[in-house]
Length: 227
Image (cartoon, rainbow, N blue to C red; front, side, top):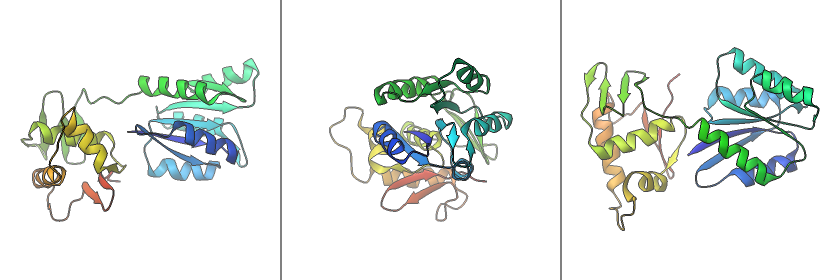
């Protein structure tokens, strides 16, 4: 699932954008001030940022510049009523990946968003180091504190979905669909719970008190981001 952050102080427009972009493959968090944006970005990871330029407490352009200065390469689309060519050039030179002037069609916005998500789609084609873990999904090499961990194909698929969405809760239904179904007509109801238990047994120092692979009761599971 893709996670999109929207910074827009126009409540009606913000609500429309959230509705237009939210779906089975994407979630949208909307905030209306720079202060709220900094708080959200400090706590969560996003695949795409959509930033309004003119805000009650500053400019989305300043937020973009600071993110780029901090080495953040997350894709950014700027939204603005400023339609002069100089404004667009300024936004792109500040590090924006796209620039959309108001008013705009929600269909066009969806197309631009999808294009950016395709370009920035995360891949795990190289070794990932997360806390005590090293995961190489291409070579099927998994290690904790340097020691090899043997994972089944199903465990690898489940781990990959959770790690790609680390910091976010992945619903049980989404996990079952991504890991098992693939056209299958029936999946044992407890297959996910059993595989989660096996993964914890192999990856967690204390499977009874997991630090990384956590249950979000009533919803699903998350790979926790350790600060």
